[in-house]
Length: 252
Ligand SMILES: [Fe+2]
Image (cartoon, rainbow, N blue to C red; front, side):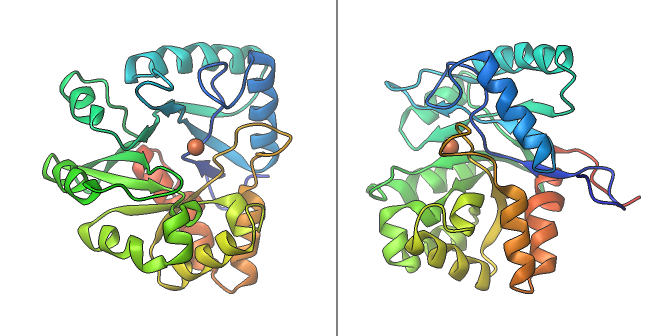
């Protein structure tokens, strides 16, 4: 359901659709079903962001590029109108430094002269040294887009813990499911506070499967509109993600 007046529908900068390379889709058939669900949800463009986590999910920029190419061919064969782009959800680890050196760190794109990396903190903490690594990335003209801070156990109980990262220049990606309450009241309340403070740059699905982690971007957008935040509803699901990916989502 692409909106009238826009060349593109909504844009998803975080999902796990590439088959059998992380805890998302486990087969090409499932990947195609997820892509169909995305299109039905109003998404026209999606960045493929499998987990990049040394020791757990050994994916790299080059492996994501080739998996994305294969999926693109399958999407065309199945006539599913979803444009896809290779990226990754990079776990905060020291290996990031080696990956960058070896040109194996995947980026979503570029914004205002900075390359944008989707950066995932561990679920239950913000490890010591995180600020130092983030500072180092910023010094390399790399800006972290922090994945679902509203689901981090530390931030969820005290939103101020993410403030220093916003002040340093990190961007925040809130997950669509959190916005509509799929991850519980606390995550939803935390997301709402982040919107009120205008800290959020992107809402994305982080979809993994159709059963428990389906794409809910349209639902999140509607929720924002219901709060009277029509400006953010468009910017966070379309304008800013399009800018980061470098695609045209202009009116017309
Ligand atoms: Fe994810």
